[in-house]
Structure formats: structure tokens, C-alpha cells
Image: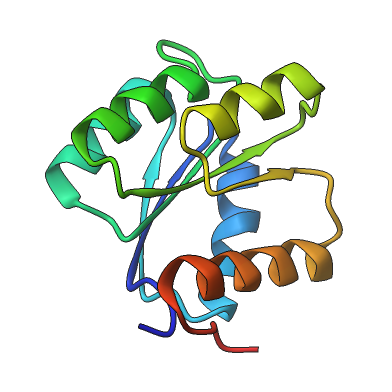
Length: 131
């Protein structure tokens, strides 16, 4: 698999979802599903079975760390990348402890964000995304 065909993107900020969606499409993602909070993300994950999930940490209703726990309870092999403006050591460690494949800050420059997502795809799916 060169890049997941379906990606679930959960963030409560519509402009962030749009920005990250554009990057994911440039990397070759063919289907994007969007959620505005963690509860919606978990429900969509269960129904749609996406190949990869990007979760914001701070969201209403259910935060990203709880959504990560619930998603991994549904599928321990799910590939979840945390995408957030927070990067405290405690938050990063909690995300990785609960099974996140990677952790990316929202203010990461576009080129770096693309590179990290490509590397995550290569590690998790054994291939590479389109350049």
C-alpha cells in the first residue's frame, strides 16, 4: 500500500481540517472523512474503518487522547497520528503510550508536515506516499 486510501481527520477548527486535507490529497489520499470532535471521530472510525486517523488533542465533547484510546480499543492496529498545537512532554508521552503512531504540531511548516506524514505512511504501511 503506497498511501492509505481513506483518512479520517478530526479537528474542531474547520480551517485546520481544510489545510491538512489539502496536504493529504497532495500526498495521494483519495478519500477524506472529517470530524469536528472526538466523539464524532470515534463513531466515524467505527463505521468507516479508515486506513489512517489524524486527531487533534483539544476538541470538544471527547478530547483527542480519549478518542485515541477508544479507537485503539476498537482496532489495536489502527494508525493514529496526533495533530495538535500542544506539545508538552506529558501530552506527547500520553499519546504515544496509548498507541499514537506519531505526533505532529499544527504549526509545523507545510513541507515538514508533508515529510513527517510520508515517513509515517512508509513506516506504518511499508510504502511511500506520492512526493
